[in-house]
Image (cartoon, rainbow, N blue to C red; front, side, top):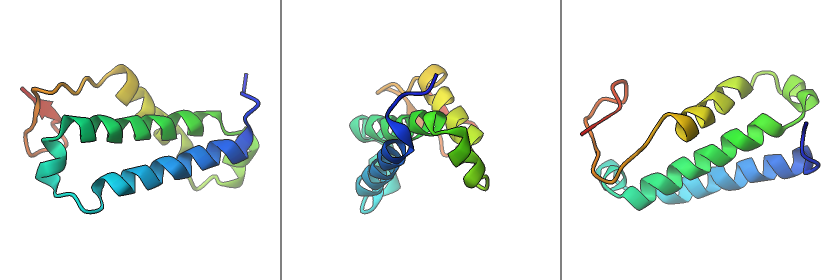
Length: 102
């Protein structure tokens, strides 16, 4: 069952999260980002918000904007929430395809 928030509010949540992500990384070097656990967690949280909001927009909106990969956005959120545990002692190994290593 869908929330009564509606598409307009959900889309606003998505836009605000995108703006926050842009603010986090726009003037940040990659090494600074990847070594700052607070920044990484905030970044992932905004991606989770995008995914959650995308999951709750109406089917009508999803059909109207069918070029958007709604299921991939929601799937990304599910991975972040359920499968990834970014710990403060993990370091990026230089290969996004392999992910994080200890």
